[in-house]
Length: 141
Image (cartoon, rainbow, N blue to C red):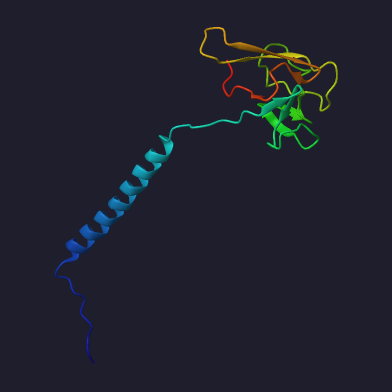
């Protein structure tokens, strides 16, 4: 009967190669994760305003298809209008509206424009007080 012998000449070499490969794969993963985390933010969503309504789908008109749940934190846009009747202060997006656009949807947005006090956007009955055909700012104070 023939006995199989294990090659015991270089067991440390096998462990070293395995450990080296494992460390290399981990290093590649860490470098990749750091690269992804360091990616530069290059955009935001700034719908154009037409007649006080936000054109969310980009078709150049404000219709019943221009809806966004939690567009401004917890606040929705319904048919292009901002449901902000629960806001107590400017940019109070943590206060969700009542799910309907009414005359109570009056609020204020303060957007960054490079100045210390920003630019104020008045919302009346859900309609944005912003020039028609112009996109809303992407950063708010």
